[in-house]
Structure formats: structure tokens, C-alpha cells
Image 1: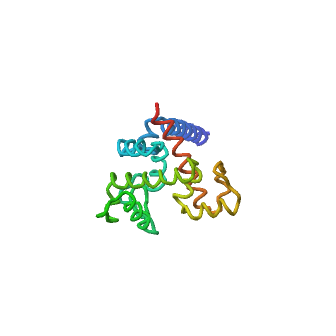
Image 2 (image 1 turned 90 degrees about the vertical axis):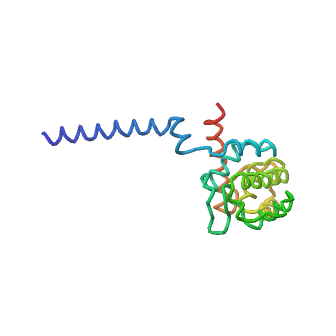
Image 3 (image 1 turned 135 degrees about the vertical axis):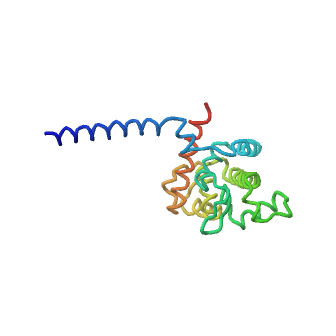
Length: 189
């Protein structure tokens, strides 16, 4: 009988702690501090607004790409907050008329966000503001997206990320758009 009472107390304690933990996890404070932090917010806003991008979309890209780690490096060689590939970064630097650009500069948040938002804005223009297509191009390459559009008859109104043939790109688009939504909910109040 004594063991049964002890077990009831233990189960009740676990349920209470789980309920408190769940409640804390879902507070805006916890979400902002640990799940959806927004460092470099001033830089993100400046370049996003200058380039007519949604700052929350940019935050979603950065969170998905690097979790705001300036030293992030992908196995394929993408680096910095917005995980720019070296070839893409060099092309963007040429377009932005940055003659002394080096890949090492992508570790600087200001440089990375400036160049990453410039590239994202070029994709926005190319894909007529369609966030699914521009994010797919950011992750999977603009050439692949153009090929898919032709192959599958997608128009500029395409919005079904589930139909993207690269699994990684499909998940990427979903994660960025979900993060964008969470950033809007947490930071636009």
C-alpha cells in the first residue's frame, strides 16, 4: 500500500513538472530567448527594408541556415549567417561592386546579411515575389527552380512546397516559412 502511495506522488509530481515545463516553453520570453532569438535585428531590419524584403523572412532564413552562428560552415562550403556559397558570394560581390571581397568577410554579420539580402532580393525580383520559389532557389539553386518550373508547368503563382522534387529543399522552404511566421508572432507586437 505504501509503494502505491509513493507511486501516485511520483506520477503526480512528474505531471505537475511537465505542465509547468510546457507552460514555460510556450511563453514568449522562452521562445524569444531560446527557440527564436533575433540577434543582429538592427542589421537585418536595415538591409531587409532597404531591399524591400520582409525582415521576418530574412530572420527565418538566418535561423534555418545557421541558427545565427556567424562561424557556421556547411559541409558544402557555405559560410556565415546566411550560409552563402563561395561562388554565389563572389558573384554577389561583383554585382555589388565590392572589388576587394574575400570569402573570410562572410563571417562578419554586417557583410553576410548585406550580401545575403542582396541575393535574396535578386531572387525575389526574378521570381516575382513568390516566397516559395525564391526560397527554393536560395537553397536548391535558381537554375534548378527554373528547370522545375518548365518541367512541371509551375507558374509564378506556384505555392505548394510539397511538390518540390528535392527533399532537402522542400524541408528548407517549410522551415523558413514556419520560422518567418513565428518571428512575426513574437516580434511584431
